[in-house]
Amino acid sequence: MNEMLTMAMPKGRIFEEALELLRQAGYSLPQEFEDSRKLIIDLEDEKLRFMLAKPMDVATYVEQGVADIGIAGKDVLLEEEPDVYELLDLHISHCYLAVAGVLGSAINEAAPKIATKYPNVASHYFREQGEQVEIIKLNGSIELAPLIGLAERIVDIVSTGQTLKENGLVEFERIAEVTSRLIANRASYRLKEQRISEMVERLSKIINK
Ligand code: PRP
Image 1 (cartoon, helix red, strand yellow):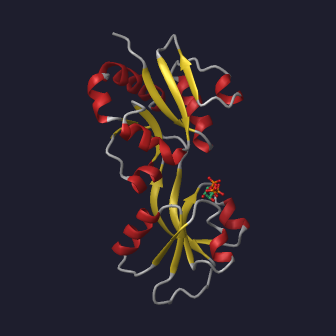
Image 2 (spheres, helix red, strand yellow):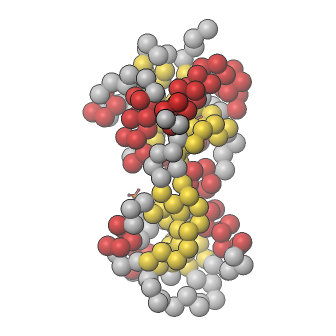
Image 3 (cartoon, helix red, strand yellow):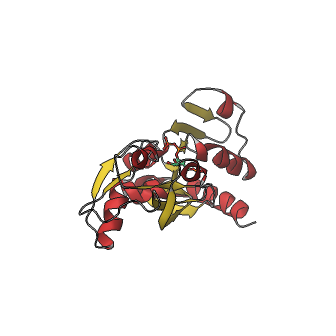
């Protein structure tokens, strides 16, 4: 039986690389993906439904079962720890999580403030280091925080390093490497195993080329 498979796709920087990968794997995704603002796109021929979501929300859709599978950054998986299967490292959108700040800034405060979009990752990291910190959760433009005195350091994604550089910040420590992963809802994986495995196989062939 060839039932509909629903996939949550992250809009934003992962999006284009994810589309490219799916196209290389033989899925003929229409230009509509790039051009329209539609949030649900069906590929009737492939029996595939795509949901275009915020990257931070993909794992939630998959965990809740409204999407069978999805593409999520390892950063989101580390932060949210969703109860999903991580099926495949897609080796796209490579970047890393790092601690950064202003070079030579006072870092000997009793409990320095750390601004981040990743409060769980940051808390876990500093606990492991045995350092007491105060986490300040922000939703973006994290690099602003040390420049305006909101935090001593930040924990954020570094890709090209351009944002740090242009804002006079330096990287202190690398926390974790990040790539995008194919994830699956646990029940869907049992119920639609054949369809999901077929996609894993098609994507694996391209990744391992
Ligand atoms: C991410 C991240 C950094 C930047 C790193 O932000 O939070 O700010 O990209 O990329 P770079 O090393 O190539 O400069 P994003 O652009 O996703 O926006 P945000 O500030 O709203 O989180």
